[in-house]
Length: 270
Image (cartoon, rainbow, N blue to C red):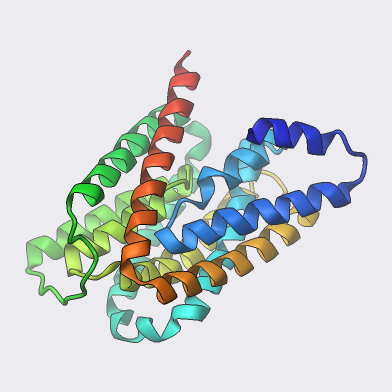
């Protein structure tokens, strides 16, 4: 369906139609991403590639757009960040080096193996969220001993590497890691993910990836506008409807992201 729509849009000679298509694509994908805490790359990144944008430029454009998603979501939920600033600093200090590492070596990493790994993890998270009926529905404040703190920071670094190299689904991983480690509910964890991953991780990754090749400025404008408005709307809906809607959306997006990445991996191996 996505390929068919892209083919139809490419048949027009006017860039206006392509721009409108990109805006709505970005708006809807980022609305669902804002509700679930990640997964915008499920639709947005493949669509850019189908438009003929080289992979690394498409990834850089996608990351710049998701910075706007992070801003839109954080703007709506900024009050919930006040009590988690210390955790946010940990995610930034230990995650950003991973993002830089992943973005620096993305040209030399086999995408198929990364897709396979992240696809399996995403599907596991979908089933885990589905069968754990109480997961992320209430908020607590777990006290961590040294071992758990080191484990948390190690996983943040690894997810940062994945974020810098393939992007899709890494926000979901950070969201579930915050829930499991600190006992957060979905709304609180997603707010923190928007602020750290959505803004700072993705901006850093976009800067490093843009060195590989320039991004299309006309494309970026419509992606950013769609991402910001979609992010704000998604954050508003999640706060309006509560953790139950967010949990269901999270589970669905995890499953779709996982299946999509597995299909990409299988196609790449053929």
